[in-house]
Structure formats: C-alpha cells, structure tokens
Length: 441
Image (cartoon, rainbow, N blue to C red; front, top):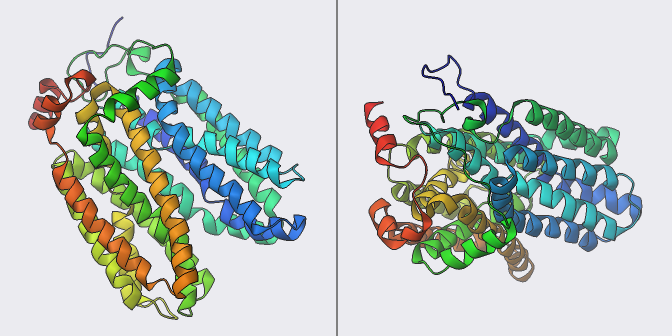
C-alpha cells in the first residue's frame, strides 16, 4: 500500500467530516419532530396523547441503547455501511409513518425504526469518524460533529413547524425523508471507513495507521466492553457525569422550558424561539469546546461547564417573565454555549481510559445520558403536577450540576487511566508521536 508523502491542499478527512456532519444533522432533525406531531395526530386519529408520547419515549430509549452497538458495528462493517443502513431505516420509518392508521404502528415506525437509525448516527458515530480520520484537530472535529446533532434537533424546528402548520404533518415528514435520502447518496460517494482505504494517513498523523481488523460478533463485543468497563471506577464517574448532563439539558430545559415560560405569561412561540436559539449557540459552544479539549485537561473543562450550567439554572426562575428581556437573552446565549460543550471532553476521557474500546464505552455512557434525560423529563412533570410550579426543579438541577463537578474532579487523568486499565489498549492518536506533533504545531 502506498501513501502520500506530501500533504494534499485539502485532506480527504475534511470532506469526510463534512458529510458525516450532514448525516448527523439529517438524523437529528427527526429527533426534534415528535413534539410537532402530537396535536396533528391527536386531531386526525383521535389517539390519546399518552399513546403518542409512548412512541416518543420508545424512540428515546432505542436511540440510547442502539448507540454502543452501532459503534461495534462500525468496527465490524465500516462507517459507510452503517451510516447508509441507518439513513435507510430513518427513511423507511418516515415513509411508513405517513401510511399508518393505528397507534402501535407509530411506536414501531417512529419509535423503533427511526430511533434505531438516529441512534446509529449519534455521538458514537461522531467519535468514530474523528478518531479514524484525525490526529490533529481531533477535539475540534468531535466538537463540530457532536454540535451538529443539537443543531439539527433544534434549529430546524421552526421550519418544520411552519411546514406542519401550513402544509400538514405528512409533507413535513416526507421532506425529512427526502433529505435523508440525499445525504445517503453523499455518504456513498464521499464517506470512507478509514484513511488507509484511499492510501492516506489520518489528518496530522506522522506515521501510517493501518486499517483496524474487522472483528466478529459486534453485539457480543459491545456487551463484553460494558462488562469489562463497568468494573472500573472511571466508567461510573463518567456515566454519572453524563447522566447529569442529560438530566440538566434534554431532560429539563428542552422538555420543560417552554411550559415553564408559559406559566410566567410568555408566548409559546417566543419560548420555542428561545429554545431554538440555544441550539444555534450549542453548535458554537461545542466547536469551541472541541478546540479547548485539544489544549486543556478535559476534567477541568467539565468542572467549568457544569459549574456555569448550575449557576445559570439556579438563576433561571428569576429571569422568567412575559417578555424575553436582555437577561433572558443572555441566559439563552450562555446556556447554549455550555449545552453540548460537555461532549468532547467526555469522548476524549473515554478514549484515554478505554483505548480502542473508547467509542463503544462512550456509547454506553451516552445511553445513561438518555436515561438521565428521561428520568428528569418525567420527574419534572411530576414536580409541576404536585407543586403547581417548576421552581423546585431548577434548584434540583443546579444541585445536580454541583455533583457533576465533584464527579469530574475525581475522574482519572491520563497517567491514572493508563495505570487503571491496561486491558483497553492504547488509543490511536494519543501516543508520544502524536503528542510531539501537537507540541511542534
């Protein structure tokens, strides 16, 4: 196999990352759609909101559980095949949804099919692309790709809402399915499983990096990785940090911000626009966080992020009012910058602690993120029903952020991780040669 000795003007890694980002955006747009379907489906089919909500709950659970298995499948069958299969599942689920006439079909099509597709193109997909194709700028790429998920989920909500209101829910779903089809074509044309497939080194690598050997039994490997990593303290520290992350973002702000703002007299459209604005700044914040993760201790970054998030959530009850004043706008901007910024440091810590299994471990950690989000979403509704207000919920969220700060401080550093788990193997791109390249850069 021959390799280029000169760096091309545009390394193939960047188009690969761009197409991977488009796939993540296309999948994430489906994750933000269920909230727009509740009223139209209730009106058309007279289904209960509970049965419609059950499909969304199944979607969230499947999304979280599929991710670690998807990481192993990417190692076994390659990035491109898994991405195309995931987008195909999303398109099939969307197409079948437009033809359904029973509530259980919504659970099967949207909950299972689309949940599996979007879960396969979540953060583990981003981590795998970044670790295979990049040595330099890896943290930056992880930040950009993971930020694409929040961007796709939140920023396209206003456009999807407009299509649903003016054209109906079916055209909105069909539009998403066609978008996924276009991205699937780009994946086939551009995405490759590893730089070695096209005779290249990963971006910034000083030596050739061979394509990883395909491993049999992806599901068994995924379960084995969980069993092995669960015996180590670092796994539970990261899982606790990320469960709190899910509880204090998806679980509370994305789910309960709009009804809480409505309780204070704010228009629903204004509150939804504020949530979408958080999505815009979450992309910026995640890219910046990836850049910072390349340069600073990821544990300290997590301390800063959760400390800032906790302070903001504690202040939020005092900021609510009928109008979105300057203080609320400032909250939205800063919270957006911190919203998904936790992802690059956690991905890097998984890689440092668990080596070649890092992407699968992160998949399991991300599954607990979804568990934390779901638990807080349910608990938030309970608090509102029992107390008649959301005030106690924001206080609890702030306290949880403080607990995440303590957990992050106890996470193993690079040296401790090496002593703690030699069974994981070294992480590609984290060796002395790569670190020396960073110093020279």
